[in-house]
Picture 1: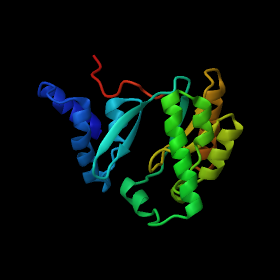
Picture 2: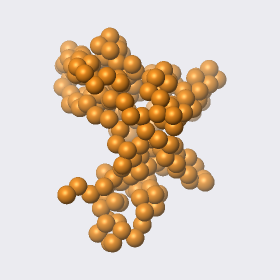
Picture 3: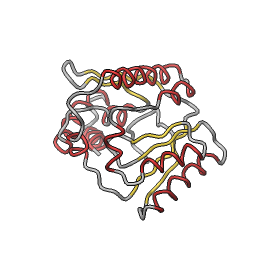
Picture 4: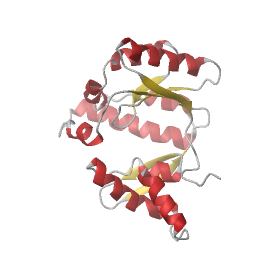
Length: 210
């Protein structure tokens, strides 16, 4: 919403700024709500595709690419997770093994988008530091993930601070719908309703729709 508001305001005033110029003010606006200055939401929303950001000075953002055959199943359970609280529960320090694992996978995910390589991306969706902690905020998370993988997902993780989960596949047939159904049904088992959508990463970013 911060990216959309910045884009809309810029349009109303004659589009004097580029989308890249809007990233910083949009991120400052999001900081007011979330409590953290991070461009990992605003940058890809404005630019489209996958982006790398450095939120500490010097502030830096670069767009790295797109994976053509990536299909994403998004499931949002009816659970309230506040971004500020989800960030505050993270530890100040992590183990060396956890750091090495997450850094390696982060680099490989970046390479996957730069190379348009779905298989490399799928092998790298594995967070051993943050996911186990934030999973505590989502009832049934472990079973939802397990059932999504059984249904054919190549990877499952929490989107940002949650509560939305994402699963990935490169199939365009019925498999995405089977994965979606497995996740929704598992949340229902825990008495939790959910909303779901099957989509792909937008490569254009924020734009006007007539």
